[in-house]
Length: 293
Ligand SMILES: [Zn+2]
Image (tube, rainbow, N blue to C red):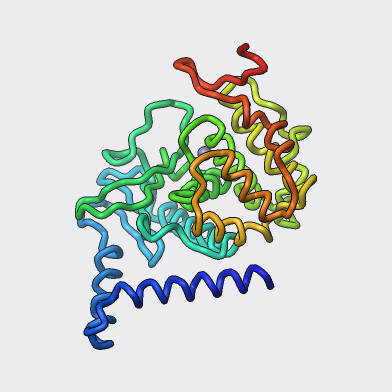
């Protein structure tokens, strides 16, 4: 109930602000024409000559000329993506931020989606399209190998844009950890749709061999333990996003304060245990103080 009230008040604030931005002299018809133009401006994607293209109000999925995906597989990918966009909307009770919506997804590697590392199967980013419009971008190396877990993980990154801090190693640990537990919602065995699901526990997942792997593992452990120890679960996500929208944190410390507000407890120790306070980048990659000093 509390969440609903917060959401409703947020909507009211948005309405008020947009009301203030419109000049008072304009009548209602002019106002709605302006709003419509703004919507069309963002929803009309550039007309690059893709071989396959499907779109809805949230995103467009494209595949370049010579696309390796069959029409059937491409259609399947589109419906999978649509389903998981609905999941993200349902869990967060919000959308990707306006500045990057609707987003664009590329089904294979192409001029827009380059893959530097062989191990990367997908990534999320931002782009400026052929019409000079900024959008969220989801790159799949090949939609033949894109699993549900990968898709939900990358979609979560799109939902994090302008909300989660992403400036350094501690912030990366938080973002990857949250994307990790969100993607766990796509496992059929996670029947309660909970971040407390066993499969998120370090006991099941292990701790990762490389430093980079450990960052993902520790991040996931962080959100698993926030759930187990402090009750932070999927039902708290709308409140989290609401707070992030009102006051986007600029670093990990500020993010911790927001989580504290959401759960009504001090969670510093849980973040400490995940290594948020002593992880950092060097030229060689990610390090933890405990190992490096
Ligand atoms: Zn990620």
